Image (cartoon, rainbow, N blue to C red; front, top):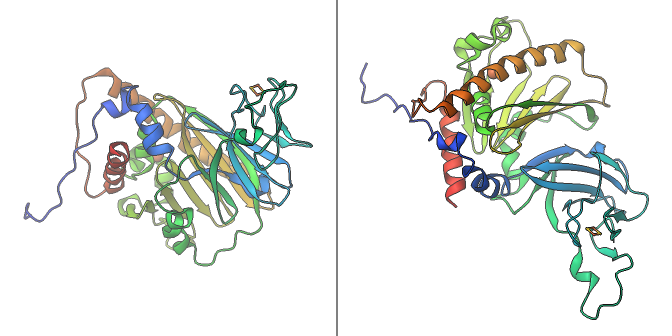
Length: 342
Ligand code: FES
Ligand SMILES: [Fe+2]
């Protein structure tokens, strides 16, 4: 083989990225504040006053549907002394959004309506104390937020996925189920595992039995990685699409609906997998689907937690990424490098 024409084996990212808590604040601002983050489907906010709360890499956020039907997003932080505006994950406001700490009340569009029993203060103008907004954009009913303006619209970001959906209709989808799996590893350890099929034959025997892992490919298109895993049975109808979008979202499209897999960092050493299943009219997800998902998640969890321990142990310095299987891992690491350099 002519070694000069073969691609280079890219070096892995520095171990500090995965184990040094000082790296985490750079990622919060460089990666997570400036990216489109999936939160929920618009059906989870059915009417004016419906709200959903979430946490994006340490930023508590609140989505609420206004009188005008529009979904808006805010930091879930009161402008008085930073109290939380809601309790729980979702609900419906009958009146203004009222902070429980001292009772400041906000309109559904974020304006401060009343600072309860504040007293007379000549220089206090409630118009200056609206909730801090976050950006909200929708794609096919899926609601995304951004703390700061990302480079490009949500439509730009999802375009590589949209192109492959070829007119698929999602208009009847609703949230069928949400599940969360905490995993003890850095979020990037998990994302990188998601971005390659190299480990499928050894870590996922039952998945390997269904797909032709020798021909498993992952390719990049913009900020999206696309997995292609032909089924072993040539007669099987493969209509799935298994995609990932920078920085932490799996978009797993099935014949009937889809599963959004957000790999939510919870500090530098923990990630929580937030699975949102969207099904026709919110119909229940089959036991078979959930059982298969549990098996694959447990297998991945086992290996990524061991990798994280080994990264922390100190022996490992640097490896090489396979040009055949780990192109998307290399692309991801390059994206992280760019994001934290800004
Ligand atoms: S912190 Fe919200 S009313 Fe005081
Ligand atoms: Fe896996």
